[in-house]
Image (cartoon, rainbow, N blue to C red; front, side, top):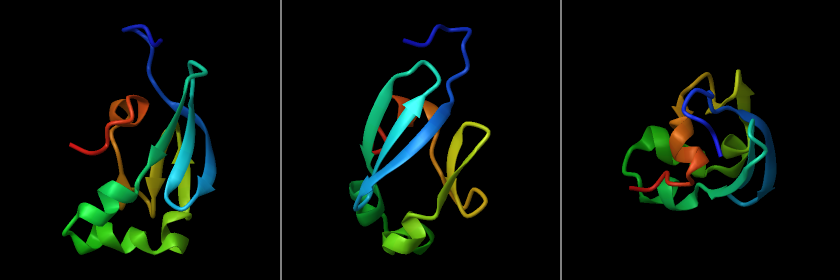
Length: 87
């Protein structure tokens, strides 16, 4: 568990197939996040374009943040840590 003083960051991302990524955080915890429900329920074409699996797989880690296309798509780190990207 992360202490209040510790900054949460992602250390590693493993592509698991489809729209699922395993995220490994700096406290050694892991989350398997399925991005498909978020992407497929969005009406925004800038988000829906990541339903193209090649675009989705073109993610990167930038100083502990998961992002796509120079922050064209990104998520709050706390939401990824708690696996709650759908609201």
